[in-house]
View (cartoon, rainbow, N blue to C red):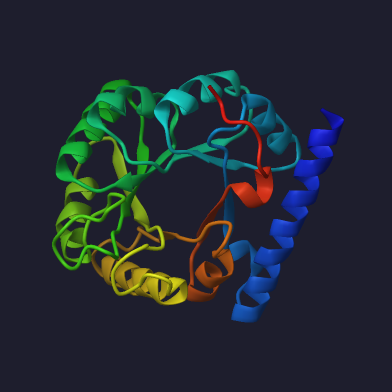
Length: 239
């Protein structure tokens, strides 16, 4: 366990330096960017080590991995983000542990999340996942609402009991005009965030960037970066 803690500590330090350097290059304060460690496929023991090392935000993208892990780590001072495509039949489970769902992309999901959050007396932070490979009105390959659908979906979240509209999220697209152009994609997300905040001023979160492109996300103005492999490395998958 000591070896694993040393490994994670070293990786975290490298990621921290990358974020700090990117903030300096962009003329931003380091505290403007929150690191979310994506712990998918890694065991609860790693989450416990990360918490010991000062990590406070963790993310998962599959409920079947996340639910037991969150339960095993319920005593830790962690904020849990769900970042994967979410089916409505998993909503009850996810609302039980997630503080934020970053992948809200359709009205049916908003309705289901609201119903469960309201039933359990929780307030759930919601980010709209934006598909920058979807044109103005389609859906993206990996989920997400097209830019043209943001306003309507944002209004729906903002008016839904138990939900709080906190901002936007994207994944750098593999196809379309932004494929291979991560900085441009993230800059587009920030423009969309600025537009959103005209009608929803509190929706200030901009979640973008992962292990390979966090510098571009910070340069564009992201407030949250989601980093997995750069912190956790390569380990056997669960199951």
